[in-house]
Image (cartoon, rainbow over all chains, first blue to last red):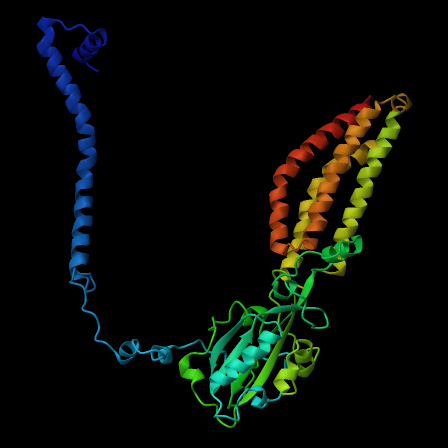
Length: 300
Length: 146
């Protein structure tokens, strides 16, 4: 640092400005300021080409991009289709509704009934049976057996109805509510040291079952690959709470039968267990324990 | 109450709980809980979690038990209140460990949640272990070294 600058600093520090030295002081100050300003300028100097290159390439890519969204006017509304036209008429739009399909071929069940005739459908002597009639009768049956929730799926030649997963006792008799609908094993019901140690030493398992009714005039084909609890619960696509008009209004052909598939699981909390194949009971025993058999067999 | 009696009482509590807890863990490892990956993982994690929680303190107690303390020290009177405090602290700590290991499956906790519970309990059990270790460490080696 030269002498004049040291002097200038001293002047600034002391707050004293000698009039006879004002020119020197000003020039020193301006020199100092210019040096201060020169540093960032030097830094930005080499940055200029980089910024310029980036801006150019961005501009070029924007011009070359065929999909660059040009601001356009809002697209005109599509011409009204037949379905949209029918939306004004009750029941017409319903015919267009599609529901998810149940997996085909079906996952191998623990137990399966032979194809059952539709004897359980009420009022079949009056008019040809529609899938809507079968849906109503099946819904009544499972409602009477305590199932409050079911899901409908499309199935080739008819439809499929899946009941809510239910927890059972080890003999596959449904547990009383609310434990019946609890998806986890849950806490101990009656506390004892033995039960606590049993729960600790072995992962507590619960018994669960899912019942699937398949109403179709086609053979129900079973897949080779074993399914798991998740395949029939969380991974199953969402169903519908009723059949759409397009399926329910269809007349069930003479060969339409109802096949009931029962899927048994023994699983602990947080575990994805495989379906027990073959099951410990036959399908009829299962349906008797769930109070569905008398209605399905038409003996109620 | 003599120092030796206090030492025996504390050692009995710790060794009894250790045998009980290790027995339960062995039972879980051998007899069951091997039917799912989550359960197997939980069992191995239980061992890894349990051993550092007990072994340091138990080692101090057992080492002091077998250390040859002078006869005068062994007969030295120790305030009962001190023994009571140490026993209460030890029981609270050991019962906490037992509850964290054994109870969650009975409360319907899934193996993953149980594992998370063990991991999160490390924070407060660590502080608890510090208190226990300090109290027992102050009692055993100090007296046996006298």
